[in-house]
Each structure stands twice: as C-alpha cells, then as structure tokens.
Length: 282
Image 1 (tube, rainbow, N blue to C red):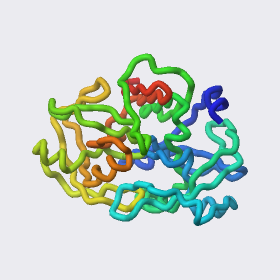
Image 2: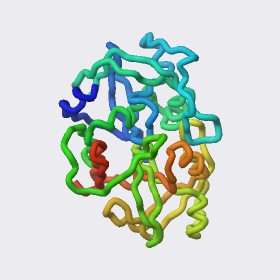
Image 3: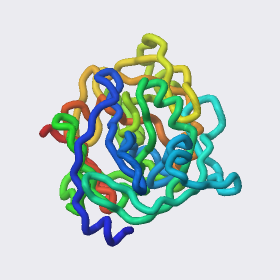
Image 4: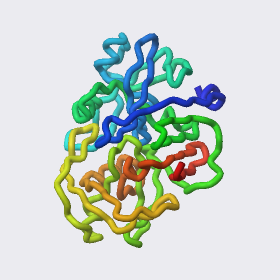
C-alpha cells in the first residue's frame, strides 16, 4: 500500500455539502460497488476509510463485535463512536484502483448525514492521506494527492495518540495557541475556556455537531487571527466545551480546530511525510 501510494498522483473533484455547510465531499468506490459519497476528513485518525454500517451491509462486508476498536473519540455528549475493524478488496478514487486495505465500519456517519440532509456513506481520513501531500483547492474544488514535497510552509506536529495535525496560531496578538487542522469541520472552533479567558463576545447559541452527537456552543469573533503565515481579520469561531477530552484523546494540548472558514477561496496544502502546511491564495 505504501509503495503504491508513493507512486500515484491522484486528482479528483469535490463539492461542498452546501454553501452553508462546506464539508469536503468526494466520491469513492469500494470493491465492485457503485460510487458513494465520502467526506474527506483530516481530523479522522482511526482508519484509512470509515464505512457506514448500512453501506457495509449492502456490500456484504463482514465485521464482528469482538473486532470493535477501543478508546475512540467523537465530539458530542455520548460515548465514543462504535467502530469495527473490517477489510475491503479494493477502493476506487479519482480513476485509480487501490488494493485491499483494512478499514473501519461505523454508525457514526448517520447523524452527520442527517445534519447535511443527504447520503453520506464513508469518511476518508489521515491513515490514508498520511503518505501523500494533500492539496485542496477550495476555489476550483479539486483535490490533488501526490508525492511532491512542500518546500515552504508552517511546520506541524501530530498528536501522539490521535494523529491530528496541530499548528500554532495567535488570537488578537495573544498566544500561541494550538489548533487541529480539520477538513471535516465546517467552521473553526475555539475552546470555550479560552474564549472566556480572552473575554471574547458571546454570540448566538449554536450546536457543534460531531461523531458522538452535538455539543452546545456559541459563535464569537476575534479582531485578528494569525496562523500559517496568514492574518485573518474579524474571524469567526464557534466555541465548544470538548477540548479537554479532545486533548486527552490526541495526546497533545488542543485549544481549537481550524476548519473550512480558514480555507475559503484558498489552497490548503498538507505535506504529511514532511509535516509542513500552507494556506495560500490560488
């Protein structure tokens, strides 16, 4: 799998779930099945591909209760999502057919599908992306996976337990604070504890949707947000109360999540092998 990944350049389109919910949705195929909708999710570090339990049943992919993955984390008030180890014979992506791989099967995609009001059958995550440089062009809506190294950019670290890409940023000149880069987040999120410490405004209440349900939060705005060599003015965050649990799951302090509103009309490049990241204008 690693050798094949390094030899391939894969390019394919994506779309947003909706203008209001800019989740990155792509098409993948499993075994001989029809193309299905998947979210491209750098924040998912459990399995190369998570497949919905409904889709697994339709494809005849077997899994057992004793193959449940332990210690999973998901945003929301419920316990971690149920994920079971399974195996597929092939995956199709961007016109390429990739060989057999271990995957996960879960019911955690159901609430997300309900929130975006459309089918969602899979989640392509870090353990697949980790051998590539990932280029997401949010303006042209094209994904490129290649072996090309990113020569400039910001260094990032990975959580020791959950492999989140974490970079440092400053809010209103204060910090640095640590943000997990998550293409599966439709908006950036800030720890409520940090928002209160920085005396940020308390805006409208909003639910923060995750794999374990929704967490109560509210919107806030900062005057300046400096991250990855860019300065965002009047940048909006949702807030969440789950960052202690996220930090424990990641094995690293996480103060916020960098989501889609940071990448709007930009090109997000993540060089996983060399652990460098950039956000640039196309």
